[in-house]
Length: 69
Image 1 (cartoon, rainbow, N blue to C red):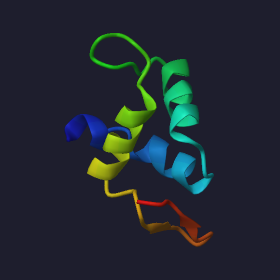
Image 2: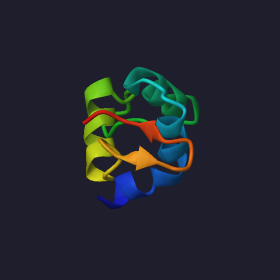
Image 3: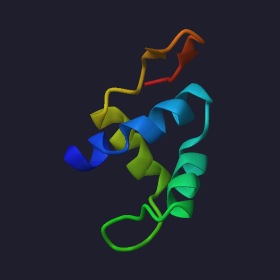
Image 4: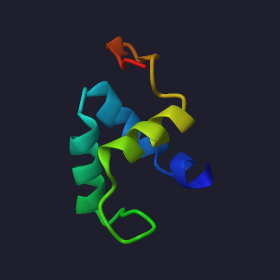
């Protein structure tokens, strides 16, 4: 959970912007955030990270961006 929590500040704006899991994973890979195996995160991993952070199925911020659960 600590690893996911360390990404909250980066992921919340991506969720607000409506980025796909693939786009989020690509952006994280671009700044060197890789999986434990040294590969880019898979879209399914992004979904699990967002779920752990409670960022799925919630309204985020004043722009009312909705992330489907």
